[in-house]
Amino acid sequence: MTNPQHHEIVVIGAGICGATIANELLLRGKSVCVVDAASTPASACSSHAYAIAHPHIGKGSPRLLRLTRIAFLLAEARWGLAWRAHGIFQPSKKDKIFNRVEVAKHLIALDLDESIALPLSAEEAKQVCGIAQSGVWMPRAASLNLFETTHDLLQDQKRLTCIWNTRITHLENRNEKWILYDESQNEILSADKVVIAAAMETKPLMNSIGVRLPLKPVRGQLSIFSVGPQDPWASRLPRVGISGDGYCLPADCLEDGSYRWIVGSSFDEGEDDLAARESSDEFNREQAKGLVDYPEGNTEGLKKLGEFVGVRCVAGDRLPIIGALTQRPGIFLATALGSRGALWSALAAKLITAQVLDEDLALLARFGFAADLVAALAPARFFAGALAAPSALGAFASNSKPVFPSAPKTK
Image 1 (cartoon, rainbow, N blue to C red):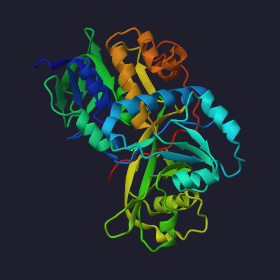
Image 2: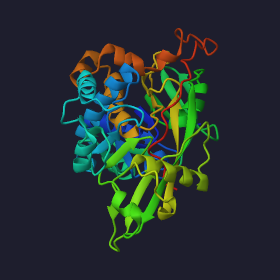
Image 3: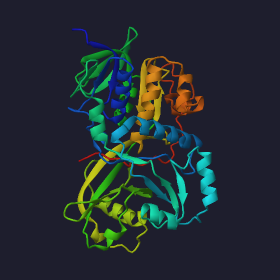
Image 4: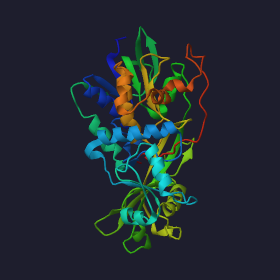
């Protein structure tokens, strides 16, 4: 048997996260091999053209709040012209009385200045966003075409090798190198360091080296609606993005005077079926009424144009898994991105690159990383102790409700 092709760094997965990590390593002067089971980049969830990106401003985990702020700033800086900064409005909960002072204090506590997030009364929101609801306006929040961005990141260049139509099914450590096998049990590649950014495919790959991760799929369907110019819905369509119970993008006026409006997303925990469902469209129609506070709206006015269906990978504790698998030296993970692929990919590129290049993680402080945040993302958080052997599989984190998908795959 001939020796497998050897590379210093192999990235498994050519979605937005794998592509961003590979690109960051290339920018740092490294040679990188990217391998994917598909024939082109961005074939799964990253084929989505309408991902939204904004910092989390709810009352959730303090670490999640801090991390999404850092990730948002990194994403905004990285994506440049691809960053469609139309702004996103997050309405107040219907059962809460809007208190500007309290909301402003909360935003300050999150280190979000008014250029990133500011409270608006219903009257102000109507003027600024076209939505007569109180809430928080995030003027720099954006949407991103993951498909185009991923392809741009993996453009041909001298130090980049891409291997397509090759599914890596298991790994083996031999002579301080990692051997990558395909479905036919052929030794395809060897590498000093392997970055796995393959969503749910990460789970069987980790199983092959005696590591179990608590990953689960969450199906989501995004609906594309057409609204006629004379329909009552036309006067209620937003000119900014809205993120609340579901999300929507600004409505686009087409040449014939009608509007195209993208609303999402349904969620089905534990499911990975990519077939479109009428029930999911109906769910999104009902969400649309809530997003623009139009409870009396006739959903028959939201005519179906198309849909996106995708399956997100989530971890039990609602945080992504990003970092070195210290129990298996040379393996680095970037998975469980949930509904925030555009944000977590930018963060993963900085963190994984620093670890792959054996840099002092204190250097990450300039991006706002603290040691506790690095630990909060690390794969090791799912284990009670080091994995000395495949049988020593410590305790999993709690299986709380996952972040549901907001950037599904094109069908």
